[in-house]
Amino acid sequence: MLANRNAGSRLILHDDPGCDLKHDYAEITVHEDIALATIDTFEKEQVDPRFTVHFVKGDDGVLDGKVSYLSVLRTGARLAESGAKPRSGRPGSCRERKAN
Image 1 (tube, rainbow, N blue to C red):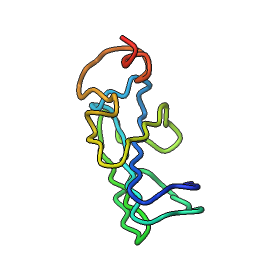
Image 2 (tube, rainbow, N blue to C red):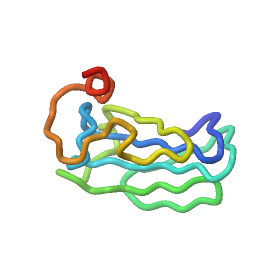
Image 3 (spheres, rainbow, N blue to C red):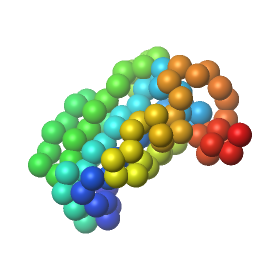
């Protein structure tokens, strides 16, 4: 469910608490201000006038019910700036990584 998201918002839902991008994740891009919207699954590509869901299949292809961390990117930020580390294998949360 998306609630109170502004146009331009980008969210990354990770199934790995360390945000390792070799695992499954979904990127949601908000195209117009949303008061409330329901997303039935994160495991398929979805295009809605209000948002887009881009699913990236990683280690096991299962994200629904396994979201461990949510990254919220600044408007215009690239995925690398979110704290997510592609194929890093480093333990800990994204927040812990930023602190190190």
